[in-house]
Every structure is written in C-alpha cells, then in structure tokens.
Length: 177
Image (cartoon, helix red, strand yellow):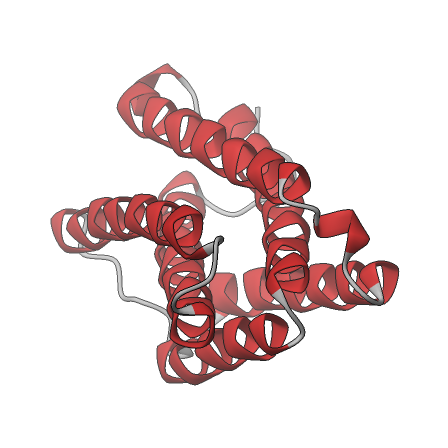
C-alpha cells in the first residue's frame, strides 16, 4: 500500500538499482585502495576475495542499470576517488583498521539491503533474491572483518562512527543524484 509522499514504484526501483550500483562501485574502490597498501600482508588474500565478490555484485547492478534503463549516479567520479582514498587511508593505519572499515560499511549496507528487501514484492522476486544473496555476502564480509581483529584497530569507535556516517551519506546522495 502506498502512502502520500511515497515514490511511484518505478522511481523507487530505479533509485534502488542506482544506489546499489554506486555502493558496489564504491566498495570495489575501497578494497582496491586497501589492496594497493596491503600488498604482501596476511590480510591481502582475504581482502582480494572480498573485492572479487564486490566486483560480481557491481557487474550485476551494471547489467540491471542497462536492462532497466536507469542512469547511474552522477557522483561516480567522487566515489571513484573517495572510495580508493578511504580504503588506502584505513589500510595505512594497519590491517585491523582496514577490517574496521569493512565492518562499518557492511553494517550500514546490511540495514540498507534489508530495507530494500522489505519493499520489494512478488513482482520483483528475482531482484529481491539477488539483493538477499548480496546481503548475505556483505554480512560475511562484516563477520570476516570482526574475525580479523577490526575491533582491535586503533581508534576503532571513531573509525566505525565516521565510516558509518560517510556510508549513510553516500547512500542518501547516490539515491537522489
């Protein structure tokens, strides 16, 4: 049931695809920044595996952008640079800080994808199933970050709060622009 002020279903769906594409693009760039700094470290292979999953997610949303004729966010150039810098900056603080970045981002993405799943009805079951599958991958990334000492990172609380806020802002902006 739609309420006054709700977006028309087609616009809501376009925004979902747009923001998910932007998010997966940003996630890939975060991991690329981390990999550039952490080459040769014990975390490298783990981060490379998570980055490969983000690449798969990105390719899926790129396909959906094209199939459904949804324009990507105008902010992709910002996410290109900003994602890489966020990844590199956290990696420069150490492997645990890189994992703290993953934990913070993935907590927000879990909430974001859960909200989308709840809005998609039976007519969009394939998209809902894709989002649910990607959400499970993101939850696994979150758990991997915790297992690799994210909470032991220097300034963990500050990193977590700041990166969560950046992620929420990126979602809000990419949905609309």
